[in-house]
Length: 284
Ligand code: AMP
Image (cartoon, rainbow, N blue to C red; front, side, top):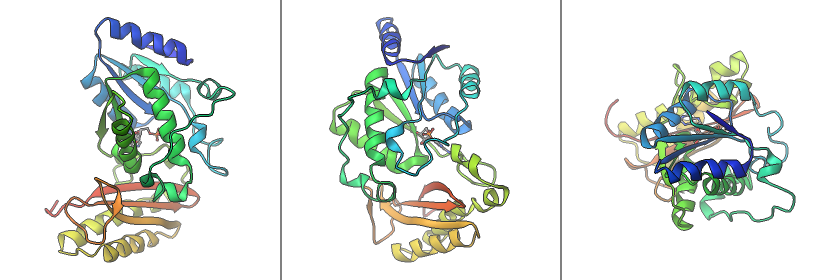
């Protein structure tokens, strides 16, 4: 496995592969890799002869007072997991090489980046879209794989790729969960024991939305309120939003339908967690 610490050799490596006719799969991450990241690596490997994983905690997507400095970083652990998974190149650039002095151009956010996560984290998606555009330009993948766990991010990346005519095909991987239903996240490491137990409330809120929908409830307001109530049953949790959107536009809906996407964000203690699920009228 190549370990590449600078943008220039990253570009040279993939260009050499491409000259040999090899397709390139790419999984961008912020590291602290877990089983969900590895599921994306497996999807990428099934699509391409060469797989690149990036580990880059992107400073421009963190707001002031957020967890950029304390975000979990464990490169040797990430490296070992990538080796085991048969990753071909691990790209681990320094922030100063991705954003050298004078870096000034950013991707402008569309309106769908200003709601939900974007409303609570102003400028977050400007940073996400900018770094993803830069990474796609450096790695030039045939296929780039992102998780459904960050549904709004996935929507916005697909929109950027479409609107800016970027050549990569975007694939998504399903949400990978712990046994009790908590969506895997590098931030789960912040949770205390009781918070870890409480954190399952996000999944419970989505299950509640499903149950109401299957029972015939269509009023989005009623479903949103029920999701919030479920989150607040956990003592250490505060809902930040509980929403139903049309996944084709990310616009909130007033009437739930079988294509609606339920999204929740909550703070459990001080840790922000996200989860989402498509409403499905058929019993599980
Ligand atoms: P991160 O390192 O948290 O920025 O995540 C890197 C990629 O992994 C993103 O595309 C995430 O959506 C995806 N991801 C993170 N957690 C999960 C999960 N539990 N299930 C599926 N994809 C995930």
